[in-house]
Amino acid sequence: MKNPRELLQVLARQFGLLNKNCCQIGNQDISLVHSHILYEIDRGQSPSMQKIAETLGVDITTFSRQVQSLIKRKLYIRQK
Image (cartoon, rainbow, N blue to C red; front, side):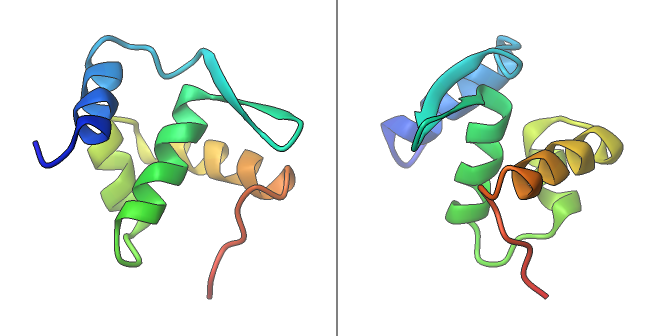
């Protein structure tokens, strides 16, 4: 692993902790899965939705719903 944060991301995925709230952005609580999605988007260089879903071990339909939730809450703006 390159850094401790990456190790923690992988461990959280493996232990199934992606559905619990973990932190806040502004005044909004976000779940671990949202945290992981935002982390992977930031970490990658324009990663595809499919690639991030595979990295997180989430099916693309579930992943798409999570991204839509982030968009609705204005925590992510989809780039064209």
